[in-house]
Amino acid sequence: MASALPLVAVLAGAFSVALILALSPWLKTYALARPNARSSHREPTPQGGGTAVIVATLAAAWLGVSLLSATALGPPGEFLALTIAALALAAAGAVDDIRPLSVAFRLTLQCAAVALVLAFIPADWRVVPALPWWIERIGLLLGGVWFINLTNFMDGIDWMTVAETVPITGAIILMGLLGVVPALPLTVAVALFGAIIGFAPFNKPVARLFLGDVGSLPIGLLLAWLLFHVAVGGHLVAALLLPLYYLADTALTLLRRARAGEPIWQAHRSHYYQRATDRGLNVKTIVLRVFLVNIGLGGLALITVVHTNGGVCAVALAAGAALVGVLLASFARGRKA
Image 1 (cartoon, helix red, strand yellow):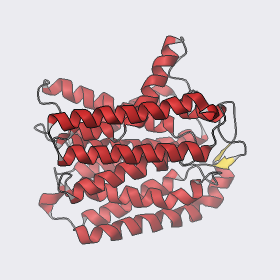
Image 2 (cartoon, one colour):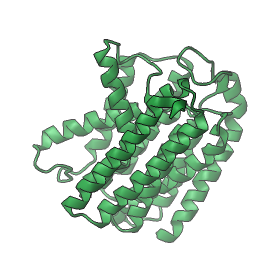
Image 3 (spheres, helix red, strand yellow):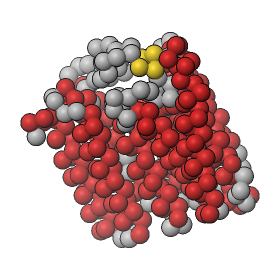
Image 4 (spheres, one colour):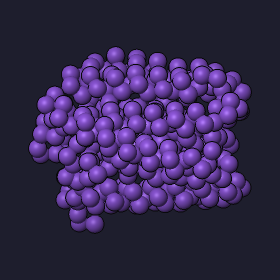
């Protein structure tokens, strides 16, 4: 199977590029994102590139899965449930990109998508065995919905989702090659890695194409599912380290907005990376810093996988928190830094 992984990545990347080129005329006509008070872009730009990323990811992953033995596929129906859930979120995101949907509908669909995936997870797969089973499952449901939304929240400037997805999937691929992550999530990580690389040239600052909710929502689900497999394999610290920048930026931003009495469910542009653009940092500088920090977090996560000692994990988590703290502080200071 390992010998087929490069083929899965290449096919995902090529399919992503081909679909983007095929869809571009339609997206330019019907899916233009026009600048508003919350936007970071200044010119109308087509969105919906996530359609190509998700279709390419799932198609390449299914091709890779066809090469797996039945025992390597994991629980029966797990990948099919993930595929259905991801496509449902993509469809809703596509509609939302053109005509905004209500918050209640989006949250209901997201809960249903995560619940569908969890329904095919064996009961004895535990992240925190000390917790009662039902409390953990509720936590996984809420955590999955939260991760879908934070991925969507953070997709606010060019290359941001690329700078997050490439290091996370890259680290998970290495974990899979080390035997830490099973064959199924390894295959999905390889496919998503290839597809997002195919999208990256079109989203390079200044972007000619945006991902859109059609991409950010299902990518959030796929990443959450991949991180769950890292955590359920006994590497919870690694699963926290990989998305730590996203977790910190969104959590601190929402806390700050809640303390100020702002409605946290409404769209805004007060994330740390958005404030950095307002304070003089250009987009390339911001995403480069995010990418480098995520590479560092990936390295720390791999250390905790290889050295599972509690002391090593605690030091790695503290180092990751410090790394993210420095990044957020640099964004808060802006160009003066």
